[in-house]
Structures are given as structure tokens and as C-alpha cells.
Image (tube, rainbow, N blue to C red; front, side, top):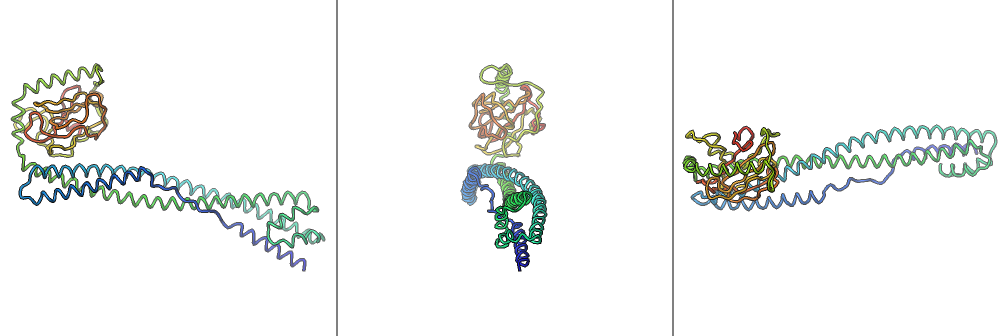
Length: 420
């Protein structure tokens, strides 16, 4: 009977060993990815969408009128500007999502490697535990065979492995080797439990990261689809505005005649510009210009959304010299810096270039923006590529709204198309 009881106890102990191999821990979830910056970005997108809706309602209202007017162009331009803002925000959101996806994928790869390593460590410790425990059970059996029944009575009344190990430590008759074996078993049990808890934690983290990755990929796809749609709508509205403007102001030849009759004024302006370049190259005043070969990393960005050229470089259709490119666009259109730089000229004239700016981009390269209605920056201001610097118009010697754009190297006009 006593031997049968011993067998039952050993079976209980072995069963409990299997129980200890089960993983247990509290789930750990990924941190919230919706930060205040993401929330602010969504608010801006929603606000712009509302403004686009209002602008479209105004366009629909004007389209019901029999005649197309400058108001129609202005309304279209307002929507175009809002669509561009929407595209910029979508691009920013896409950049953020791509960065998050890259980081999350790296986290997933690292966690998967850690899971493999942790599982290998658990397997090794479990094998060591099983072997030590088997040896210890063999020791108990030897004690029984040798007649140490008084000690076994204490062990065989234990209900689980923890009781067996604890009571065994209390038995005075066990050898020092048995005591060390018990300590080793207890330590390995604790290590295995801790490792399994950590393994479960990593598995939960892996699951959360994979869910986040899929969510971000879906959001990325949605944003890219929306941005493509916005770009298509933007192109369509630009075509409409340019077509209406061409019907209302098909007077490219009149632009040419006006400019040609003011050569003296242009020469005077050129002298002023040359003086400004000279001051800038010496670093006098509040600005510090540059000289060089005019080389530039990458291309310059267009100064406006319009690609409708009313006069190109280097000549008008008549063959007369024209030192820049004229982009036909409605008054009030955003005029943006073609690259990072510093404003070295900002003047408001009622002739020639009208309200115009010159921005130094370094290495002797500069750009000029003329005939604006309003200048938004002044001499000495640092500007960045794509930053709005003015509103287009028809100031100075101009008979219709457009943006006159020049590229200069050390003050000398060169072909803008080599840089755009």
C-alpha cells in the first residue's frame, strides 16, 4: 500500500510539472498611437475639407450665372489653394505613417527574435529541471527501498510538488546532496515561471504590434488614395481656371507691347538690382548675399500652381528679349519660394516689375518674382522651399494677372527651365 501511495505521489508530481509548463501572464498592450500631434493634424484636415466644401458651393453658385467673370476665377483659385493645403497635410500624414510602419516592423522583427531566444532558454531550463527532478524521484525510491519509511510518510502526505519540496527540506535525515538538489529545483522552477511570463508578455506585444501595423497600413492606403483624388481634383480646377482666364484675358501680345515701351524703366530697375547684389555680396546691412557658379542640388520648385506660360524665356513670340517666364494665374494666387534662401530685394513699384522680390539661394543663384499684389516677406528674411512669399497680381507694367519668374546667377538672368 505504501508503495502504491508513493507511485501516486510521483504521478501527482509529474502532472504538476506539466502544469508548470503552461504559460501565464497578464496581457500587455501597445501604447496608444493617437498622439496630440496626430489629432491636431486630423483637425486641420477636417477644417480644410469644410472650407473646400464652402468654396465648391460658391463655384456652383457662380457657374449658374450666364457669364464667367473674375469672381469665378477667384473662387476657383480659393479652392485650388485649399486643395494644395489638403495635399500638403495628407503628405505629412503619409510621412508620419510610413515612419510608424517602419518602426513597428522593426519592433516586430526584434520581438520575434526575442521570442525564439526566450523559448530556447525555457526549453533548456525545462530539460535541466526534468532531469534533476527525475534524479530526485529516483532518490526517493531508493529511500523507500532502504526502509526510510518515517521520512516517506511526511512526503507521501503532500498534495502537490510545492508541498513535497518544502517538506523535504525539513527532513533532517536527507543528505547535503539532497538539500542542494531541492534548492536547485526550486530555483529552476522560479526561473522557468519568470521566463514563461516574459514569453507571454512578448507574444502579447507581438500581437498588438501586428494589429497596429495592419491598421497603419490601411490608413496609409486610404491617405494615398485620398491624396491622389485631391491631386486629380486640383489639376481639374487649375485647368478650369486657366481656361476661363484665357477666355477673359487672351492678351499675351498686349503684355509684350507694354513691357517693350518701358525699357528705360527696366534698365533703371536693373541698376537698382545690381546695387542690391553688390551690397549683398559685401555682406553689408542686414543681408549677406553669395557668389558662385549657380549650381543647385535638385530642381527649383515652380513659383505658382499654374503651368500656363503666357511668355517664355528668352523671347516673346515677336522675337524680343524676355528675361524670365510668365505664369498666367489669377490675382491673389499664392507665390512661393522656389528654394530655401534669404530675401535680398523687396520693393513695391508702380512701374516695371511692380511689387517684386529677389531671393538669394546661395552659390550665386537667386530668383525674382514680379507683378505681385502683396509681398509677405522683407529684406533679410529667411524663407524655405515652398513657403508663400507673396500674392500674385498685375502691378507695374502688366495688363493681366500673372507671375513673372526669373532665375539669376550672380545677378545675370539665365534660362529658368534649366532649373525647374
